[in-house]
Length: 371
Image (tube, rainbow, N blue to C red; front, side, top):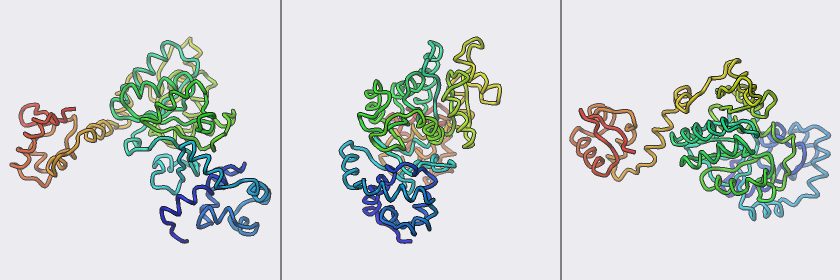
């Protein structure tokens, strides 16, 4: 197979999009194409025999040959660029690592906003649309605390728990990812009342969908969308869910993907708590605070990551020390042991960093990150 240059990969994305516009091309059939052809342009321009060799069924080949005559890849790409939407394919280096691990990762994603390294520390938060005052209080508190700890919050931007979780994450100064079941162009965003929230998410997170721009929010899209919500995260937290709830579909997807499931306990007489309480009975981790999740997933690492990323090293010596400094106290002798610096260099650098407000001396030559 030929190795494509970055420019060729960018140009090839218009053919990924064009194929995605044809009904019936989900992750499995896309995989057949990108496993067989050197590029999606080659797949787009191929004949019946070559499509058979790729493993496509006769019926889908017939549909493909008819529909591609109605589609202009260039014109469709112009629409995407006009909406300032980016295409991320499973072949891209920036495709989310966690999502790539699931059984049926989307072949491509339409995105607004940028994925960051910090998004590898992500938790999905889901729940009912008809949220109670209790659910609202819990969602705001726990999500805000997780965001402050450096955890990226993933949800589906629906009304209720989803929207509250996105908002609380942003209020906590954190990042958030919204996965929707429609196109991510301005007119297709669902629910429409969350268009302002969508803009806020894009400014400090990512808005994504596996559906082309212009796609309506059809009922059948949401169960499929839920596997992406859980797939982007290390675990799923269910806050208030009745017995029949989309949140439970997301929880099941998490289990299928070998991800941790957490649930908030609720009033045993409340319909909104039946689903989440049942999850706990079936083995989901009972959660009453953000710390329960951080400890279970050992996500204190994310807190350290976020803190060290906030502090910019001014010298090579500071850079070496910041690799090992966190909120956990560390003795100066340990820093000498872990870094290539000698005791005098470590001592003088720490003194300068303390004056800059980057570290604190807790006494006994034990140091922590100052912020």
